[in-house]
Image (cartoon, rainbow, N blue to C red; front, side, top):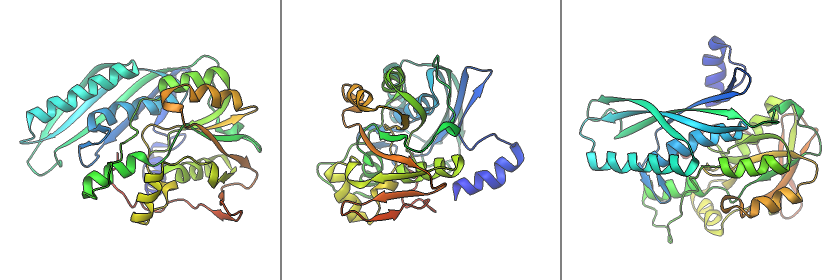
Amino acid sequence: MTRRLIDEVMNDRFQMPSLSDSALIGGRMVSTIDAHVVKPLFFPGGDIGRLSVTGTVNDLAVAGAKPLSIFIAYIIEEGFPIEQLRRITDSVQRAALEAGVKILGGDTKVVEHGKADGLYLITSGIGMLHEGYHPNGCTIRDGDHVIVSGTLGDHAIAVINERESLGLTPPPESDCAPLNHLISTMLECADIRFMRDPTRGGLATVLNEIAQDQHQGFLLREDAIPFKPSIRAASGLLGIDPLYLANEGKVVAIVRGEVDKLIARMRKHPLGKDAAVIGAVTGEAGRVYLETAIGSVRQLPMLESDPLPRIC
């Protein structure tokens, strides 16, 4: 629904080249922008401050860029506790140091009490494309491998457990983390055709978007997709397919050629220790299929509406 909204309202007027939130400017510079409305503001594994930096860094990194700097805007509700604001701002700075980017500037606005649910953050980022990397989804072809950097669904379940006081024990932790250092390692040792971070809508939605945009298809292997047992259990409790759960510290990549060396390198990195090859590109344009553990095949359609809003 969000995709249709952007396509039919914004893209129709702005004539954007794609639905991506990142764009190549002047040959090598990459720019991105993101808004963060997560609820609650604090959750196991992160908070809105860390999320705002890692989300922007990751959007640049999956576009093939080395993130350099970030601008941040605060929309603050009247009466918001100053101590919480300090805590979130400290988290912003720690995440920036972890990613190796600088906060260059920003803006603040205060709105009336009850009009902003506490705090919203907007971030924009700038990076430079890695030498030798030319992102072009049109080069995806049959037989290319689909890989993920680790277990899926951690962020969504961590946020919903905190928001709804589900009492899951131990409490799930978000995977909120900057991926730029891991992705730099990946680009050094593999022929990567395309990358995305499977945030809102999860793995299945991201692959559907790629399949429709690039007129290709995907066949995934259910038994190869990494999930923590607790995430599978929580998904079953909530009645949600974990393939549609949001992530904030994972990358999906389409890779050509041998992938064993790539997976081995990724598993040496803390954020890639559960990296796996989960499927391949097929010739059926616009379709994503899942081969189940019992050998049957089912289609994974585009997610129409998000069952877990305010995740990022």
